[in-house]
Length: 391
Image (cartoon, rainbow, N blue to C red; front, side):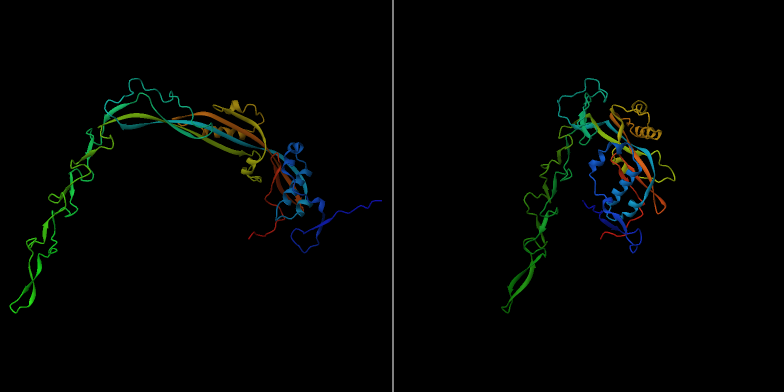
């Protein structure tokens, strides 16, 4: 004869008063963490959500929260499961823009020019994308037959400009005399006199100030710095000419002006979640950011040169009008600029199942949501959360 073993009992605190008598809950009721793959591959769960399964999802969710108590999830009763559908809409557009600008470079006399044929339209010039589709890139090419020769406006076609070192004078201040052509006399140090020792009538030696013979009592002598001429030195930068080569035209006096085509490829992406059942005065449910990450089914997945609402959404006959309006809004935003065009667009519309579950706890109705094919749980008013804080 075999003996039946009673299930182990796990004491769980009451809702708000830990001094109440503990509620005895069989430990087998408290779920362990389930693998996400097991939930995602459950085909029946993806198609519908029963009241029992909704409660199980809530218990699993609460069990994974460190600061939640299990009583409300286990002892509550699900009174209603309301299915609805949300839509995740994404539009990605790959644009190309073309802009023309002038390019001016020095022109050596006799160099070849490209200006004998008509200038082509910029959209006729073949420039393949330098990046993958739906990425970003940039490329520059010359516009054919746009060469034009003109005088250099900086040097007025002379090829020479004033030397910046000497401001065109051809000479600079002498570093020895600072441009004065004179230097302080080294003998008298500018005092004009020097001390001379003499013997007086009494035979004693005394010092007497006499005029300096070197500077003739002027305190100054002619500048002796090599190359100094009246306080000026020849400018070494321009070799005393006052002119240097024009850096703009590199001394040629002429410039070649042509046009450059800049082609840019850029990608614009818009996404949004449409919840037709979400209205004024209603609980919002899962945030859009959470809904967009959930698994769903694609009802529109098209990549082509230009997406149109009527043609590309025609197969999705059950698509809600709000979704079509969102697609039209995105398409309007993705209108190319006058200097651009659309190369390719991708439209993706996914349906995401959302279940609004009403459950009773202490005779008070509360809400939580199960959404996505993997059946994620969102709640923001669970009745048994502790007030602890992480340090």
